[in-house]
Length: 405
Image (cartoon, rainbow, N blue to C red):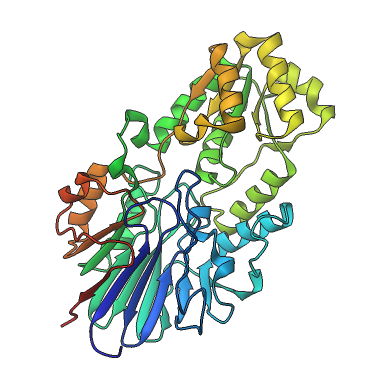
């Protein structure tokens, strides 16, 4: 349609967290934002959208906010003649996963992906789109400011306001003035918040520091792409070497994690530098035993698991397992097995902070951007949504029309 109205369709995400996809159309231009996989616990059918995944292509582009699977996991199903845009960091991470294991993103053609640069506006048909560097547990996560004539839309993707880059994010957003429509994540609205969910990364770093000082041998379970949290561990180890023991400790990762660190240091060097990393090999065992270590434990790696079991059995009072991800992941499979093993010996330490905006911060953010209309996605239905000013209820597959003049 070529009229002056903005149309927003939420194909998936009005009542679940994973696998969001939202369309914005204006004057004949159609874009989709994110096309991910549902979370494992979400019993959802495959999402097919005529003109996007099947039939003659009718979309002008797909924009992806960041590299987490619930936002990019199904991009291989997008019609091959539709342009796909994401940040260069995300593109590099997906490439690294493909190189590491051919099963990851097996159906994704990296060469078809166009890179976005934060702060640099692009034009797609009748829409002007500015990527904004955000703050999330995925590095270089992007918000999108979308201008449809004089109508301004802010799509947040996943974000938080208790990370290190809160002020930078707010400063960037405030430059663009009032927002006619805010499309925001609401992950935490349906979850009972705990104090640790909104710890600042600075507070997390203090807790990690205490744990490293108290335990000679520290294993960590952490998402490979949570670079902000890895920087916390790297900072603490650097400080430990400077203040405590110049000869130790080791910061031990595997070759794949090292390759991801190199992406972070290349793409955002002002944020990420992992100076003390060492890749694990058996010849390090003696030195690690003598000097101590912080070691990434990759669940499913037999050698890593054997080391954890060895240290928990032989010197439990000097050993801990630091778990630094969403607690829900501990309920099943290998993560449950390993964390239970440490918990039974009272050596499990949960040190984490959510990558998602808290309820109160979201309420404040709506005021900050002076949003005239608010649509919540990436959330389960909850009465908490009603606490957001100017909230508009929407269902999957529903289209809401906005006048632009």
